[in-house]
Length: 292
Ligand code: PAF
Image 1: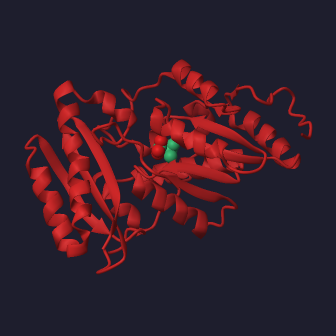
Image 2: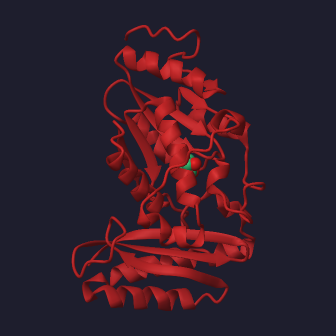
Image 3: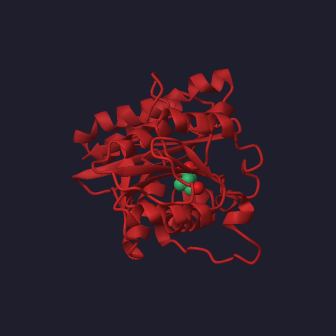
């Protein structure tokens, strides 16, 4: 393997943590210069099995690929009244997960590194960002795309991996990469679930024991809806709606069937069934593929 000179910022097979974007940028440039590929898993930390799965996908990529993980709770994508302050930040445990999974590079910038004073340029996503999650969380996707675009420039990855759990996020990132000619490939990784079907999320820790049990209804509704897809879109939605209604504590915000790019659902072919609901103070989202 080619020796990579990065002033100590990279040690093959070992985890190196970089605090500033500039430091990591020097390292990934040197790696690419030496013919290595870089895979990036952007995260907000509180790493769970779903993140581990993204990292494992990255590590299975063919060729001599270095896996980088960014850990940054991005204030731009939180609205007022959302959980920015209480969002979990277990940095040491996160670094241990990265070590266990064979990650070689981690970026843990502070807000001052990502958004120094005067940094007020923002990405403007298209109309898809105003629907579904965007209708309930105004500005969320502009903030999310802004940080993802910055991370792409800082790390310069060949591949970036995101979970399908945040399906609208994945669609918008893929679209940004196409629309703005980012020279990288975005990979969507299927959702990792608990044994009762609940999609893994860093926010599941907010659920009380009772709500944790109730939360499984969300996936059951999606699964039972998808199971009647041969009978058409109305049957899918009616079935899913009926299952959701069995759990009165779930306050459903939307249940929608869309095409895979989140346009109107087709009469036949591939579609996506998406749901968002509140359980107490916790918002849950989930989605599944549907073949109409
Ligand atoms: O999915 C997340 O964890 C975040 O939205 C992301 C992509 C890391 C951007 O902050």
